[in-house]
Image (cartoon, rainbow, N blue to C red; front, side, top):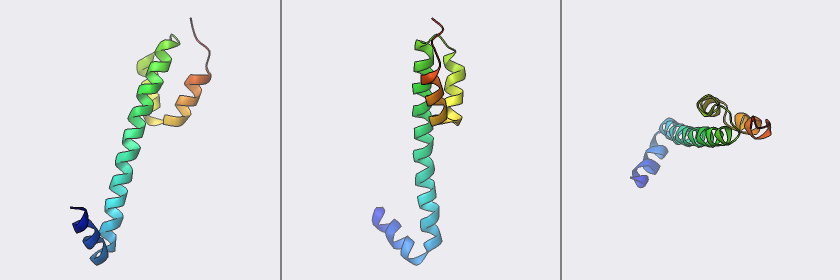
Length: 75
């Protein structure tokens, strides 16, 4: 399979760009989901709304993670 993709990239360079963009998108999506789960867990331990912080973590992953770590606990 990988060999076929490499051969296709030589004959059609634009196809290689689409493949690499797709792979990059998958990694970004997985990273966003991981950040959302981490944000939700940290928010829950601090007495904050885990669902809201998880949604924010899904869209603004690293920024939300920094904010949820810095904010004080409600407990």
